Structure formats: C-alpha cells, structure tokens
Figure (cartoon, rainbow, N blue to C red):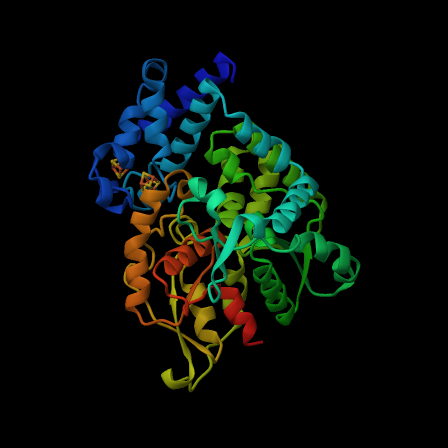
Length: 432
Ligand code: SF4
Ligand code: SF4
C-alpha cells in the first residue's frame, strides 16, 4: 500500500492528464472492446470520465474503478487516433498504480514481480523447472503449430487454451556462457540485443535468428549477462514499485556497456524501453538523461535490417510461400513501425506478403488481458482469425512474441494445423 501523500500526488497527476480529454469520442471506433460490449464505459472516454475526480471515486467506488481499468488491453489504439493527444496509456498505467497503491497487490503478484522478475537467475531456474514439469500438465495439441493444451488437472485454470511450450533453457544465459568472450572481441558496430522474457524462455529461435541476421549485416551483437524483465507486466498490474526496480536494474547494467544500438525483436520491449522508461524515469535526474539516451538508440530488429536490404527481383507466386503479417499494437500504433517488417518478408526469395484485412487490428492478447479476460480476448481474436484464414496464407508472421502466442492459439483452435506462426526475423534469417 502507498502512503497517502504518494496517492494524492498520483491523483493530482491524473487530474492534469485527464483534463486534456475533450469528450470527442474519436477513440470509440478504435477500441477493440467496443464492437463486443457496445459500452461507453469500456472506451477511453468512458474510463477517463470515471477518472476525473479520481480520489472520491476511489474511496467510494474502488471495485468499479478497478474493474473498468482492468477491462483494457493497453493497446494504445485510443491514443493513436486521439485528435487531442490525450496520453491514454500514461493515464491508464498511472490509474492502475493508484489503485494498487490504495488496495494493495495480491501476494502472488508481489512475489512474482518483486522476487522473481527482479532476480534473473531465479526466473531462469523456475522456468527450467517449468520446462521439466510441463509434460505432466500439458499435452501436445498441434504438432505444426507446436502448441500444448492443458491436461485435466490444469483445465479449470487454463480452460481450452493452446499455449507454446517453454524452451529447454534460457537463450540469454546459454549465449552469455558460450559466446560472450568471442562476441566482445568481434569487430563491427556494437548492438546490445535485449532478449525479452518471452523470446528468452519461449521463442529462443527468434533470438537466434535475430543474431544471425545482425551478424550477416556486419553488426557485433552482445547480450546482457543479467537482463531483467523490461518491467511492463509489473507496471500494467499497477506495481510501479517493482517496475522502478526492474527499470533501474536494467538501466544500471546498460549504462555500463559500450554499444551503438539497443535492438530487440519484441514489440512490447521496444515500446517499453523507448517510451515507458523515459516517461517513468525521475524527472530532471541522471536517470532521466540515461533513459533518453537509451531510448534514442533503441530500435526494433526490423528497423535495423530493412534499410540494408533490397527485395529480390523475379519472385513469382508459384515459387514463394504466401505470408500474412499481423501488426502488433505496440509496434505500429505506439512506435509507427509497419513498413519494415513487410520489407523483410518480401526480401527473401521464399516468401511473399499477402495482406489480411485490418492487419493492425488488435489480436486480443493485450499482455495479461489474455490471461485475466480469456473469453473477451478470444472474441476479439475471432475476426483476426477469419482475416488470417481468408488470405489463403501458408504462414502467419508478426514481430511480437505475445502476439505469436495468441495467433497460434487462435489457429490451433480453428484446427489450422498447417499454418505456422513465425517471427518476421525467422523468415528473413532463413534466406541468409
Ligand atoms: S479521442 Fe481523445 S479527446 Fe476524444 S474522447 Fe477519446 S481520449 Fe478524449
Ligand atoms: S488502450 Fe485499447 S482497449 Fe484500452 S481503452 Fe484504449 S483502445 Fe480500448
């Protein structure tokens, strides 16, 4: 629980941020929740209306405020269309911090964010144990999509989900042990590759592909020995205490390293490092300067590779595989990156882009939303699934590991066993 003075400060900040909203309602059409609920209270305008005069609402109506704030994918679609530049993401994140500060967090969340995520060695060890135990709790549900569904004992918690398996080991930990010395002596523009938790522990092949592509283009990639989570899961749950710790822990290590670019293959990590760290760093401090410097040098992997390639001439539809690309919200709506992944798909001789309808519509994952609001997450994903299938694609590609989980789950649900979901950089690295 936070001190009353901290809560009052957060409430004051929220009142300033929400005052910019002019109730125009432009955000209604963009919100992925609205077509399913038809409720004003679910869109940004409705949430902001509730948050104006937030302290009295919190005291009299805490559960309603919490429920409405939780019913949000933090996709940023409202922010991207708002003509009045209302920073809805900052508003929703600050409001969640205020609510968690007022009501407290569950012991499980506190333990995970503060004890596990802040200790990379412990997180790696627990993930390794999870890898060993997963055959007890999950069975293979789809060989081509490589998804698992819960065995009976887990079904009440995971219902009919299809999830990818945990990797045998942390990619970052193994890479640092095997390659750190040689990598540091390699000539070339130095790239600090920020692995991200999901790529490290669920999709290590994406990190391997990114490193292969970086090396192919003459970069010298290095990884952080003790990279911690970027902090966004903690902040999204209102635990700003854990977020500040994770951000500071990462920034301390990054500040000591020599590098030209910080590159990630996770759209959410890129968004967090570029936008959220500078937003949350203590104003007018050395930390704020460092956060800005890091943000300036941070890029998504596709932004680094795309300017260095030219699409091959003479590719025909007969000898290339059609790929449908899904734009992750954090990459397109928050960072404005959407051309580069498409260029990478077209660059190799083996793949060609086939656009789906509404490629930038949210897939429904929304980080923790896909866990806490599974039914709504599936409903939002339904049109994404149809749009993917309507293209006749043979591969679905994206640039965010959380979206990969959701898209694979949607396709496994539709028994589309022959449409694998892959990261764009994997497709590109195959052509090298
Ligand atoms: S679009 Fe922006 S200004 Fe208009 S209602 Fe939504 S948040 Fe408010
Ligand atoms: S962040 Fe996304 S889900 Fe949340 S209110 Fe804005 S558009 Fe709707």
